[in-house]
Image 1 (cartoon, rainbow over the protein chains, first blue to last red):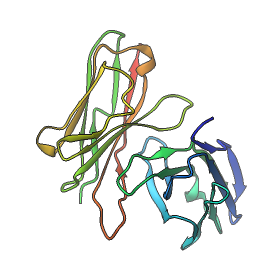
Image 2: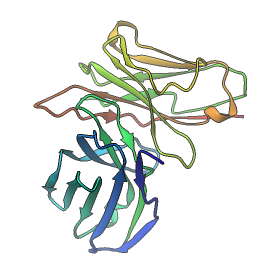
Image 3: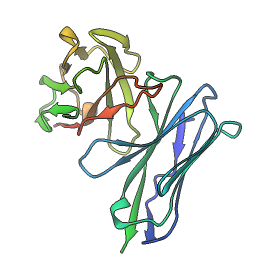
Length: 111
Length: 115
């Protein structure tokens, strides 16, 4: 069993739609949960950073962590063509520990 | 502020040859990480430096891989001899804790192709 499971998609939505992404994980010791966005031929870029359970909102992006279910989500509201990218979930045991990544979900927002 | 830089951006070598990848972290970042993504798989951790010391090298696949970070600044990752399965994208990331957050900033990666 993989440590972090993420549906690779691809996911195609019309502009303005809500994009819903999620990951499950097996290691209950994970404390920090992140979502990265990666454009083609670029490195991952941090979008959201959450400690422990709960919700976090930043503009059009909302991250949710449910540690009891070992499940995290990212929602993108009012999606734009510029949101087209690969979204990676990542998690770690501590602040400066290694990251464990999901496989990434490729999202295309159609104009 | 300059981001994490990696060199080369792309390397094509033959099986059995040696390749050295370089990473320059963001200035002042003590933490430096190497990750690798092979085709169709998730990004996987290789190792973590704190300044010049190896904090965690549990992800290094075998002794054909050697990482160094002399003086706690830039880092190199040498693969010798390279095998076909070493092909992939090698990412470097650096971080420094700020207000309880330790964001890892990633470089653009080095795409390694072993023929």
